[in-house]
Length: 138
Image (cartoon, rainbow, N blue to C red; front, side):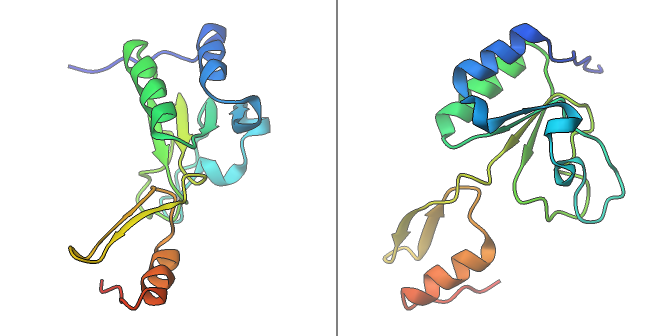
C-alpha cells in the first residue's frame, strides 16, 4: 500500500500559523534557507514546502497530529549534519526544525543519564558533562 501525500494549501498554513508565530514559519524556497534542502553528504537537494522552527513538544505534537490527519508529509530536522538524506524533505510537505529546542533538562547523577531537548549538540553535551565532573564516552 502506497501513501499519497497532498500539497500544503492555505487552510494548512492558517493552522500552522495558529500554532507557530510568524517569525518561526518559512514558506517556499525563497524564504527557506538552502541548508534545509540537503544534508552533509547525500547529494539530494529538495526543499520542504514549509519550514517551522518548533520550541516545544506541544507544538510538535499539534503539528504532527494535524499533518497525519491531513496526509501532509513531515520531515524532522536537527542540525542537518546527517549523511544519508534523513533530514531532507523527499516528499515536500512540512519540515519541523528542532534547532531552537536546545535546553538541558536534567542531569541524573545517580543513574548517569542526561535528558536534553533534541536541538542540543553533541559538543555541548560533552562540555556540560565535563563541567559537572563526568565524561562522555561514545
